[in-house]
Image (tube, rainbow, N blue to C red):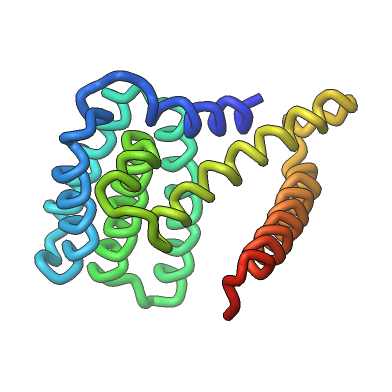
Length: 196
């Protein structure tokens, strides 16, 4: 199943051995991520965004994150094809629209590259335990939880292969589990004396 393999790719890639997952690469990755986020201020040239997109795509290919690449391109291109069509039909399609669309994929792909190449312990070692590193660790936990939910649903014989509405029950179950885990964690912190 495509979703299962995509989730497994998200869980496994940060722990594979390549140059981008090495601890000393955390600084260039953070700088690159910041550069891409502030790119909106630095440059409003379409060519620069296209070059960054091509670079990010080549990095995803280098990482062999093919499912992540195909899924991100499919979701991004289908969403923004609709936006371009609506803007074209309403007569509001401008160069700024294209720049916004390209900027969205550059930030998305850069974030994916950062996530796929940065194990949570590297961020904890660099920044200590704070809200950002805690959230980053929880994302991985939620992804693992989604994989467990997919496993339990498949064992029961439920097939979601070509049924997009079937994923609604998975997402609902995931959010209910997250809510229960959050309430349990909140109670545990209150017992230990961590009040609001």
